[in-house]
Length: 159
Image (cartoon, rainbow, N blue to C red; front, top):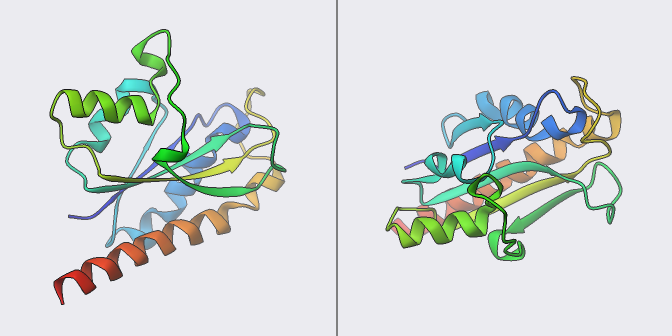
């Protein structure tokens, strides 16, 4: 089974759409190696995308103020802290995995996050700021490298 590549965001909130733009851009070049989807949903509404996959890559925006806008960071799900939310709409990946485990749903054992530090997630307008737009090639390279590593591991395991 191919891994999942899921681009998240909102096209109408400036840089928040970077995950969507990156996934759409990658879709044709990695279609033979991954199932590529995009979504503007969040929280527990995303769980259906993950069910049945062994591995997944999530492409999303982050706004921490720690890194310069356009910085691309690869993380494991274990790098994310659990954040108790007021409702299932605000469920993060760690909480989603815990719910899937409680329900005995086949959630991916490996989830990588390719996150991009953004400049603006609040201005209502389509299009990315130039510094975030410039990060699209690096995002694509990180996702492609992860897929290649997983493919090599699978091939070596079967050899």
